[in-house]
Image (cartoon, rainbow, N blue to C red; front, side, top):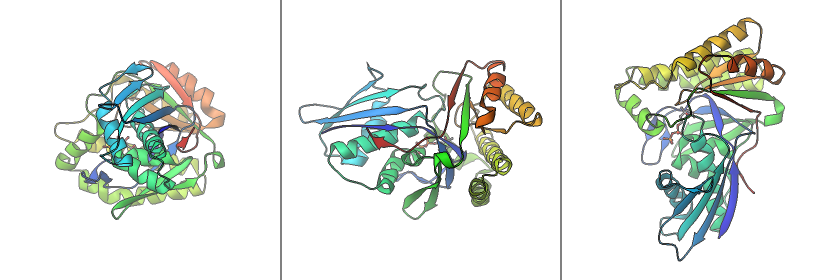
Length: 317
Ligand code: DP6
């Protein structure tokens, strides 16, 4: 009744923003991501008959804030009539600041809870369950380059390319360490209801997915950079044009984009992507990682740098 799983966050290159079914948490668009190797979340789930309610310890401290969503994820994996669970989690990077901590947490908790209940499930089934807890979590079940297809009542997630087939690095410029003002679940609903660009965003996604899929198959860095930056800026345009507007960026976010533009014009293979937070993720060729890190560290407002390669999917430890 006790199991531990580890999962790494993933960074979307073609973004998920908007749901077509809030009840089942089904995304309105497909997405493509890369799973990281050096940032991790580990989750231990222990079911206990005598426990009155679920408990969560995060990095050895009791945490009631994240407990409701994690309890819900365990209900999804183990059923609502399950015994209560003692959950303990370790995470080696800041939580809830747009660094995809929820993706790795929900992926890991679904794997650990299924195993602790003694239920054997395929990776595809686990990805679907994790996706019901949090859309982006479905992708952290797989390693390397991952596509989530939006079809029917379930999501179909698959590996496009393993991590070692095209080694890239991600340099994260942390520009703020606190939690974000509005979570992505709520923010994407505001966008769906109010942004005049939302329909167009959903309608154009298939083209971006196809371009990214082709670029990944051909290991064409320039083509992947072009479609990933375009897709990211379109998602943020949908956010900015929502009512109320959803603006996650700060001065340093924009300064980092300028740094990356300068690196690109100096011939460095790097591109940016930004999620529901102010951090900038620079994806680069592994030969250029030090150059990218040095430039981002010297950028005004950057508080910290995290580095990671590409890694594997969620698994039991
Ligand atoms: C901007 O997966 O956190 O990171 O399904 O409501 O939990 P919920 O949303 P979540 O949204 C992620 C949004 C994003 C883009 C992405 O990861 O594709």
